[in-house]
Image (cartoon, rainbow, N blue to C red; front, side, top):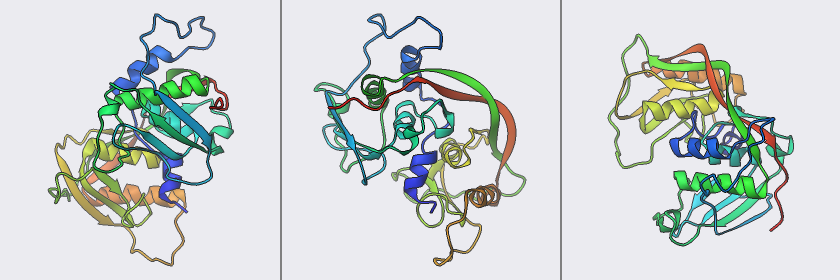
Length: 284
């Protein structure tokens, strides 16, 4: 089943490193064969005041933040943690051990008093992460999983999101304060039935598409602003089995054309996080 949990665990998050995450990545990573290590000369990374890591069976996949900045993940795999920490996609991770895809952990983390994270006061638990929160997850990986890594660009297939030859079928958002979202017609992840967006910009759409296509998607539409849109690729049948991955990809390529855009395939650099060393998390 192409459920939200499966999508989160396999294809979640964005194409390129966020500015804050990239900065910490450059400081913490160690290239193979290099004598460089994490030393006092490197600015201290933000880290949690306390964090527990336990085996998990079920729960919410991904981090949610509560008032006071407390962060919980009911189900997190290693690849999910790397995705959240460095704002990348699963396909941008190399050298991960097999257990990193399958072993599940429950994490409960509290930021230090006085940190920007400790001042967060969302009205409802939110999955959005700040640069400081991502840096804290990086520290958790380095300190508790003994992560050592470096980053490099590898040549691979990329997609370019551009304007198509037909009319644009993008509408002004009905609710401009809503969280940007794009997915399938069933209300969750891309499901093979079509594409739907709410208050989403073209760069945000490109990031969302990247997670499902497992390739970088660069926005070259030149279109600014946020939009609502909907295109039905196939009529929803509640009794039909969930489509396989290739069917979902085919539906996305056609559905994007249906809203007046197109995805062109090309070769380009793919930012990759290469794991040089990783261990099972240390006990609490």
